[in-house]
Length: 365
Image (tube, rainbow, N blue to C red; front, top):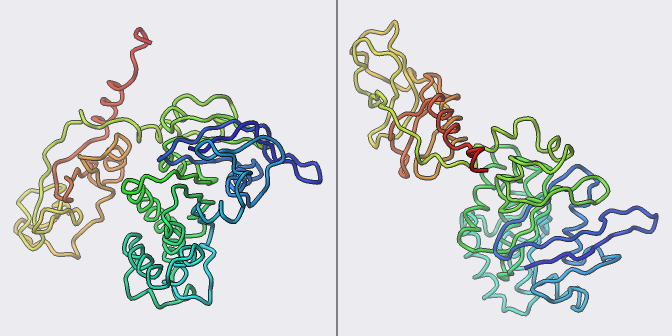
């Protein structure tokens, strides 16, 4: 557990970057600091590992004041991931990951074995171990950065806008990978971002900072979206916070409809409208519309119309269900099971009815 108590950072020119911060980060959870530029979120993170020293107040880790420890020893026990990975360009990927274990006195063989294990954990192929950072994509470099931060198995991981320098598709993949890793490892993670979507996706709790280093609200993502503390938080979270909030509502009661399907290579039924094309495992490939086509047409790849997003029944939310319905060319969202096989369809009006049912009863409140 990390605690900030009356923490202030004042720079020599009088600028106050963080102002009297009181905050407790839960052990084994992801806490996200988010806010506009100059709000003190990165300064707050860097005070935890003493890359920036506190002016006033205390930060404790599991009840121990960080100022009582040697700064170098403190940093070796805390994983640190920054934007664009910060890798050593002259070292191989394997040796980059092994850096902290070697500093802690591990043998080279043990450190490299640990590095090789972590490459697999973060989804890097073994053949990349002898490459250099310049030979990797941005997303691969960020995976190396995460692996290096985890190499000595630290209980705390600090992540300072680690995914902001990659394209949106890679960024989403890295976010999903982080959530997968966290489910297995249960680290105490402090994550800094300027992106509210990233904050509510990753955070067990989210701290919104306002300019001047003041904490505006600290809450679970669903509550932050539903009940912003003031106009600043409301404005920062954005106008579409209602749509984001659907991600925290269960879709368990959402009914699934039937969905006409045809297997790739088979014949299109006579008089067909919108039909979902699937492979042999009933995984969706795209859509075809029978209008103007002869019944009996053998469905091939060139006939396919892209199908939009998928709604996974076992882990989905009302947001993913609504997105599947809205992005589908047929107006029928495709629901899939845990294996990615078609489970049925979902429509936008069903999601809206489920949303109405999920609203709290004013009388009960």
